Image (cartoon, rainbow, N blue to C red; front, side):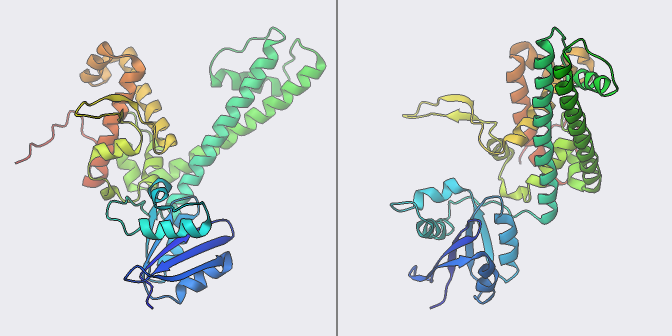
Length: 344
């Protein structure tokens, strides 16, 4: 009995295999230890292997593909409808095996080790930025209890922390001063680590051709460009720029029925980190439009005159997502005031 399709349900150390032949009959159903996975697939003739997309799935997809298998990663919500009855590893593997053969299933492109390395820097940077904010807020709260006010802004807070580390005395009890000194050291050390990661991301950005092209888009800097270049392995998996915007959760939520179209707020589905980077970048454009209106597209000025600031920033992010897709698929750079060619 020749195995044509396999569903692989993964965990930290236990892997469940469900394989079928060309007629759909069950050919194999077994549990593998982590150390047995590569040996198992190396002995099989090439077949289709389905895996749920997760943190470790890209590594295993690359490893299994080395043995000639065609590996496809799927979002978990595409697999869930095929789970029968109770939740178990065996049922999950069977559902994956079924979902990977469906023509309407959407697949996730397999990331390279280089892309995963870049994204690991982004995830760590995001974690450290949150940690720095927490520590700074803790310092603000403690000093506020003793009547010491720190002006708004992370730069000003770090400046106060640096002055405390340099020995500036505060008119607060000794015990509280000791705690503030410790927190100031942590905030400054965390900030230094963030700067180190920023330098590494800048080097990665300069060495990646796609990231450099994306950075030509207004509101997309090296951080956002490198994150997008590392996240999108194959832009051809999106049929249009709108699909990229939908993938980032920037399109309106639909609740339509009976021929009546009802659109709500944006879905906020997909990669939250990428969506946040785009929104922050568009807010910087909005700020530029207020301070230097002559430096931005006049259409942005018109939009801000009609819409609230945050709504305008979301609309810009939606538009930018479509521009990103066009630049990725066409191999071009951003051109201001570009007018698309009319279809013949």
